[in-house]
Length: 396
Figure 1 (cartoon, rainbow, N blue to C red):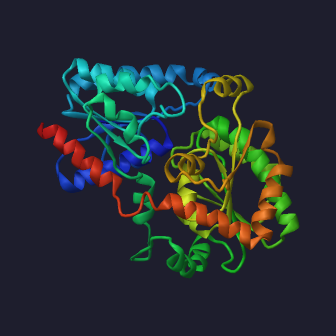
Figure 2 (figure 1 turned 90 degrees about the horizontal axis):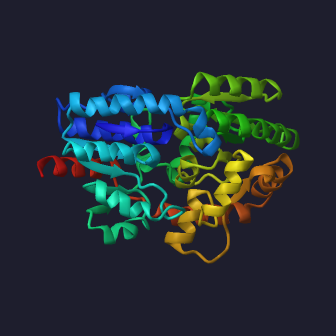
């Protein structure tokens, strides 16, 4: 059984399901996810109902409670040998307790961000799970004292990139290959191959789209006024709710963004992009692995942000910056620009976009920082390694 709580985790669940089924034909996998996990062969117990933040969580509480009841029932009726829990700790830790009561092996895939806050969760998780698969290089050290087998497996986003193909040819996006394929990718998306592209990625949760897309669209319109050749691509998460799609549609109506393409192919969109505006989250790492200079934005309810500032123990929010701090331990001071809350406005966005467009030296320095992060994830296959961990648990 594979339990994912939001769009990025659902991608990881789908990639894992494919790896498991390729190695174990006939295996039955149940789970909580969305279209990608369904397409990968997972029998869905319920669809994802994610939230983020204190105020935001209240709005989806009813859906989450129903999903939890369905999972608890399925732990008995489906009786899996192994349960894989992907991130989403407030939901998945109680699921781990229910699985443990029934003697079911538990693998936690993608550690909760205990390095940012609630470090005591390491102890709790250690008592409930049989193995940990972590996707950031510095996380394995956090679990060493728990006695649980813990492995840094790489990042599943890199698996998705490595699997990307142009026609029948695999493309690993790094510089020589990327330069040759960009005009083809732009054409496939319906964009002019010889004009620059900006990717807009406002997140997958309704409140993210509602708060971030209007300011992204405003900045994009200003960018087009200053650099008339710019085109725009907006990748849409496959599990985006009807509510989020409606918010997106209304936000875009207010701005005259010519040459805007909406697609469900995020890797292709980022490979085509010269620059990106991205909601803080997994997409920032995806862009960094693909070498796309970006500006990171995020907005929460004022109350959630206030509480977060009191309890979160990191200097940055973007994964690429966190990795530069904790793994690369880079002391150059150069980081991806993060604009949070009121700072996420057109003036600040345009200031950074203009610098990335006008200064090749600054742009190259940013790409060099992202290459340092990319080095940690090369030549790994997270989905395959986690599939092997599942098989070991099943045999044990």
